[in-house]
Image (cartoon, rainbow, N blue to C red):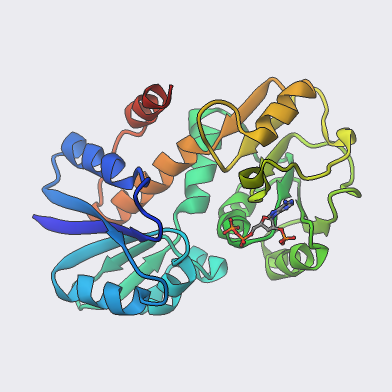
Length: 272
Ligand code: ATR
């Protein structure tokens, strides 16, 4: 039996053990998946111990994604761009490979689960923290016509736009001065945690605008509720992204793709 775990602080509410155990059952993979609460500042020591004691792979969540990036020996290209990782894998030679599957999770949820096209579209991405950095490369690989990053601290959006400029048309903006209307608006800020909204002009909306909140919870998120009140008919939350990033990590570890639809459905039902 191979051992996997998710590491974070806090970790009690993580859905990863349920998701990965379901994937394992579904694909008949013999593995055990646990939740590890790691003390702040001790990621490297605890991760070292986990892999020394037979661990095969680790998922990493808040606040250790940057620590995990530094801990790893080698990185996938998208992990290098993200500078933060959610997946570590012990390789046969003992080295630790790091990947970031968040962006692929987002793209797969949008395009496969919800049939939201990205190629040739105008996309607005709100926020410029780790969550947004982690999804930029996979989003730009879908070749949107334009991707605008808007953030409260504009300089952080400008830095991201520079860092990813070679991958496509990516520009930075303040919330108030966001240019034009968008096919898709993705909320990657943590503003909704405090019940706050990014102060966007209503001109960002047009017929058919879709919103996507990387957060999820019971019922609509604060951001999606606001979008709904402005007439947006398709308001998506991050539950699908959560399951898809897990599936991509599972694929990285085991080489098999689990079925995500049934797991997403089950989590949605449990949440009601
Ligand atoms: P994460 O890992 O979730 O991305 P982070 O790196 O701390 O966390 O980034 C949080 C993001 O949410 C940032 O873009 C932050 O804006 P600033 O860069 O200006 O700090 C954004 N954010 C947090 N609270 C916000 C609020 N009340 N209104 C608007 N944006 C907010």
